[in-house]
Length: 99
Image (cartoon, rainbow, N blue to C red):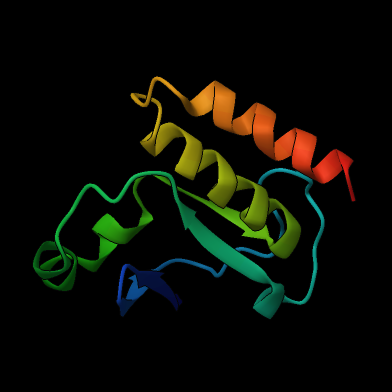
């Protein structure tokens, strides 16, 4: 068996059975509702085209809701060096509180 995974801007075919449940909440939505979330894009597009199995590394299968949360976490981790990240988060929380 094999299934497709999107990696950056390409889609590759990988071996194995297509996952049927979210790695976080274990829900089993329609398989089209599951997405591969890459915590880290370790390889170049060329490397993944040459060896599609690399697309499975550093990834989780997540439902739509958990995938959105994981994207937020990745953005925070990418910006962890920014000294003002906590101040910015506080400002966002205060802004949301005004709604």
